[in-house]
Image (cartoon, rainbow, N blue to C red; front, side):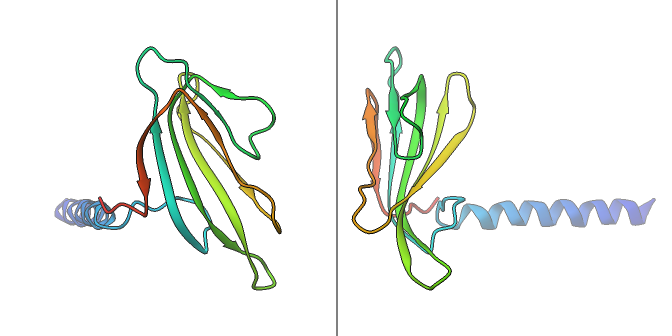
Length: 128
């Protein structure tokens, strides 16, 4: 009984420390960036019909958006070259989490159209 209690205490302590350490790291995206340089955070004001469209999201607007986070960076290819990449995460009234990406080649344009949303943050990684 005491061994099970001791093991449970050790596991709980490790989980708690892991969460505490994670809170001190930069707020990094869960995407395969070689390097990322800028992030944009958007929110939708109450009562506004917000939407966005980014390359890779298809030709339709994503509607009823509550939050949107965009990351611009680069990813490494197999041959050691890097390519510009745009990754995004979003929440809608219907979906608790969505994401997507677009990888540029040559002089292709990576851009998004954001409608009705408020820009809450623009800049480098934030430390929590």
